[in-house]
Length: 345
Image 1 (cartoon, rainbow, N blue to C red):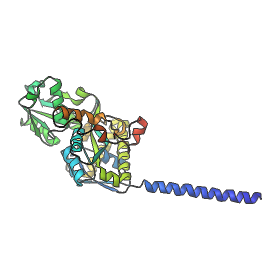
Image 2 (image 1 turned 180 degrees about the vertical axis):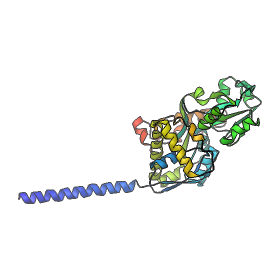
Image 3 (image 1 turned 180 degrees about the horizontal axis):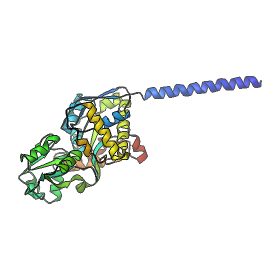
Image 4 (image 1 turned 135 degrees about the vertical axis):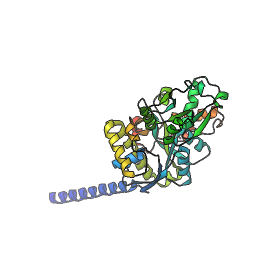
């Protein structure tokens, strides 16, 4: 009888183990990315966090397919909407405007921001008569995209400095690729330029320009750009989106915790290997992760700031779009640790 009991116990143990293996296999299968290649646009002379995540092995088995560079966040997210790429990234205000136009999109991760070490700034040439916000009236300011983040920041500085809306209208914002703005300033084709993060720091190191203000001085530490997917892409490829967000969030955390010299060496290696005919020295000016929150977790304020700004300027109508409907943290593993809302809606 004892032998029968032992045999039945062994059989039940084997069945239980087999059941666990089957459940584990089903779980792994259910989390397998539906799409293992993601098309995207890069930025000249920059390593984006998904690119870093891929190099670190955090996206596997997903591979990124570079289809070219963009100089405009609005163009990048519009390309995601039209299906020319699988995801795009832009200034949160641009995402707000696209959502207000009823584009079926959802922001899933913050990837650009300002902190005390990494921030964007407004420059003039050394010796320029432009020394205050009011001095900008009637002049040309170079930005990467009119109506996007850099214009928002300059406008916020002007408003905070007491410049009237009528006078702000007298300032001309001129679009140019970020890597070309410094040259246009030196050639005096522009009176002032706004540069972000490492491109700003490269100009500072080269000299010849005066920094008037930075986004960190004006607003503190915050995130201001996010990656988006279309609702359709998320519905059809939820595991792919989850792997992308998890991997990119881990890359952000890696950059936040890893010694600067090691991060810079990694970025240089990536730029050297991709052979895109770009300035390979700019990544040496990398100082910090420059993302507002841990692991790129989003918050309602990341979007409500710009909703309010557009409403106050008559670009949007009150209630036209709600900040909480624009983003989700459901794919970000760091959101649970921070007690973040899974989504705005």
